[in-house]
Structure formats: structure tokens, C-alpha cells
Image (cartoon, rainbow, N blue to C red):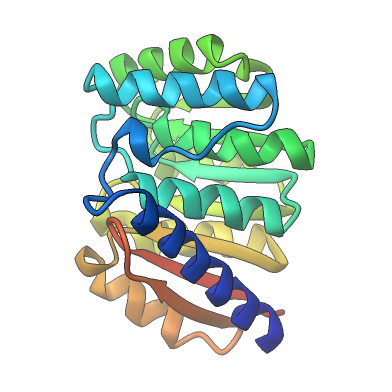
Length: 218
């Protein structure tokens, strides 16, 4: 498992370098987007680009984190990805770029109906609606209905709820699976919780909004 953590760290560093070479600002901007290899990838990236240009990325991740989400999902071969905090679907589209390769599915939770509706439209425009399930409502209640094994979980909702999400999702996470928590500087209790758990190993991705990248060892 230590080798896995080292590999993840190297991959994240590579993603960081790739973005910084494209643009000094590193924000959400079309010049920072990777090139799509297939028509399906190009379609998803076009929707990602349009969302940024039309300012429909409310409470979503910056591009550095989007690239990292895709990379980590693809390298783990994730089939079952769970996202807490859909917003308008920007981060979900980064997951879908990976899930096209892994043949997986994204289950994403959103409490706000308007944002969930926008996300559905974005997923449809990107041609990925069949690989995404949007669950509306309070995720603290809805995640109890989840079935494992979960390969990758992404936390990007209200920061005070991260520890509760961790406790509910961790039993469903397969050994070798990842929990990714966004905005690490805003969730000190969560960071303390994952670092205190002997079954977990955690590294920090310092670019963008900051990701706590946690591996379930057993």
C-alpha cells in the first residue's frame, strides 16, 4: 500500500506540473484544459469549457483539482464513484472523463434542486447522462442507502459534515479505494480524523482548492 501512496503522489505532482506549464494562473480557463483524444472526450471537455465561460461553475473545483479527480479515478480503475456535492456538475464531468475508460458509474448527491437540474442538463449535453445518477436531498440521510463496494468517494459539500460522511462511506470503501476531500484548509477536524485512523494513509494535494487524498489500506 505504501507503494500505491507513492505512485499517487507522483501522479498528482505530474498533474500539477501539466497545469502550471499550460498557464501561470491555473484557474478555470479553456487554455488550461487537456486535449481530448476521442470525440466523447472532446464533447465532455467542450461542456466543461462552456460552463467556465458562462460562469456556471458555482462552488465547483478549480481545474487543477478536476484534472486530479480524473487522474485518480482512472488510475484506480474505479467502477463505483460517489460524490457528495454535485453543484452544477463540473467536477462530475471530470469524473466522467475517467469513467468512460473504466466503464464505471457516478452517484452524486445534491441538496439544491436548481443546481441538480443544471447538472442534469450539463451531463446530458456532454452525453454522459447514462453513467451518472443524481440523488437529490440531504446526503447525510441519502448515503445510508448506498451499496458498496465504493472505489472512489469525493467530499465537496458543507465542511462541517465531512467527518459524518467519512464515517458513513468508509465501511463501503474497498481496500485500496480512495476518499478525496476538497478544501482541506477548511476541514481541520476531518484531517485529524483520517490521520488518526490506522487503516488509512493520507497525502495532501496542495494545488487548486486543496485535496485530502486518503487511501484505505485494509
